[in-house]
Image 1 (tube, helix red, strand yellow):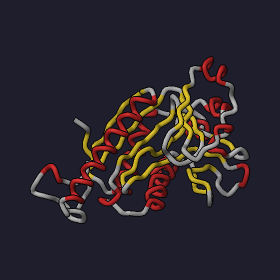
Image 2 (spheres, one colour):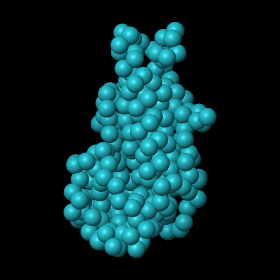
Image 3 (tube, helix red, strand yellow):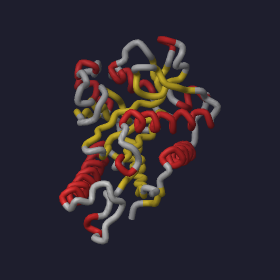
Length: 245
């Protein structure tokens, strides 16, 4: 079985509409799973009744307006800027239900939200997280930048073996309910890194944050980078991708 995934390219968007879309798609997937469970169809690929078909999978790409989001186990004290300073800069703030701590989203950053029924792929959340990281690692490699992982620290890092000199280029934070995911990754492409000074990024105060353009030394075509990321995700997850209607 090749899972089908609908692709939503939202362009530039405030945080709340994208969050609402995620929540709606996740709710629909969970309702579909409940119908199948109640009908005794769990573990079966398809049903003759379309209402009992497998939950739909989705992938959302978006570039957010300036916003700080705090994970459910995060520390609000990691927002180091005052409320007045955030208002002055036009930066919104939202507590969320994903994992992880505080992070920044904004222009020049690719945010990816997979809403996947992992039972159509594999029921291993650790493997899922590593696959998201791997898509970013491979994308960076395509631009001549070597990146990797740091044990115990989620995300993708430049110079991961360099101790405190390591720099985070992509952050991850997800929610998973009955193997349906939401939230995802944030990949700094042409991001204005000064906005990370408003927070302790991901609660990690002893390592820096970077972007692909900073490491390469020039601005990048964000649409081109997004296509590269999308290609690597497709290769890793082996899904059948189509545009949302």
